[in-house]
Image (tube, rainbow, N blue to C red):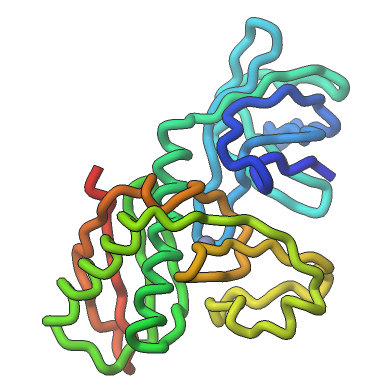
Length: 238
Ligand SMILES: [Zn+2]
C-alpha cells in the first residue's frame, strides 16, 4: 500500500518515492508514498510531474485501488525500484483545497439554517456544486446564505483532521452527511474533517488549515432539480 502523505499533510507539495509497481499497458506506476490525491468524495485527482533524475514525466491522472496509488504518466515508464521525485501542480491543488473547505462550510451553513442534508457534490479548482434536499427555498434566501457563508469564512475557523475508530464513527450519524457517501464495510478507521463549530464530516480529501484561506465566495446560482432538490453553484472570488 502507498503511504498517503496527502491524508495527514495537505500542504506537502513534493515527495521522494520509489516505484513499487508498473503497468505498461496503461502507462502508470505505483509508488510507495505520494502527495498526489487520487480523487474521491467530489475532489478531482491531482496532476503534476514525476522526475527521474533529469527526466520529467507529466502525471496526467491519479487513481487508487487495493494495491495503492497509481500515477499515470506520459513517456517511458521507470522500472520497479527506481527513485523518483514527485511535484504537484500546486496552484491548482491549493485552489481545490480552498474550494473543498468552502463546500464543507456551505454544508454547515445550510445545515444550521435549514437542517437539511447534502445529497451530492462535485468541484473543480475554484468552483463547487452541492445538491441539497431543500423544499423550502425562496430566491431571497440566496444573498442571506451567501453572506452567512462569507461571514463564517472570514471568521477564520480552524479546520482539523482526525482519525476515529470505525465503532465511534458509526455512533455519530451526523458524520456521514452525504447519503451517497456511506462508509465502506471494510473500513476500520474513519478520517474526519472538522471546521470547528461549523461542520464535521467523514472525508478523505485535502483541506486548508483555516476558513480564512478560502477568502470570499459568490453563490452563483441555486436551481431547482425537482422534488425539492436544489443545486447550489459557487465560485471563489479570488
Ligand atoms: Zn468533502
